[in-house]
Image (cartoon, rainbow, N blue to C red; front, side, top):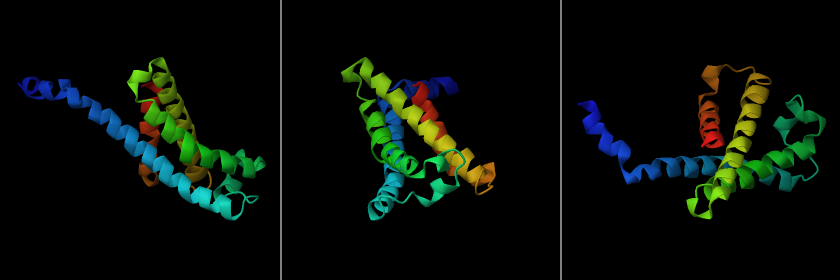
Amino acid sequence: MLNKVTEPIAEARMGILSEWSLRIVLSYIFFSNGQPKLAGLMDNPSEPLGFVKNLYFFSDFPVISSYLATIAELILIPIFLIVGGLKFIGPTAKALSTLGGLLGTFVMAVVIFGFHFGVLEETFADVKYQLALFAMSIYFLFK
């Protein structure tokens, strides 16, 4: 009986809203997290972002890492996720969506495992928000 009640909802053409809501929200969150990074880099273009100095691998080239993280969050991930949802552009859409998911997954893995666990010594209970972004990014990696 439960299947009879819920099946029309799951099969509705409005299901596209669920994917687009994820695309838009994830793009917005990455974009909004990239904005303060851009402001910091514009104020001091030759100075790396503070958190990058503490990351194991990325502290070897902190200024470049700062710019790469900012460009990924502010421009690349949002554009790839949004344009990747435009099915009418063909197979390129899938490739862009996957690339956006890959970049998002990489960024969130570095944030969670490199910074929150590695530098701040937090636990899984402390990174629920970041884990949600990680999971959303993985969704688009394989979508």
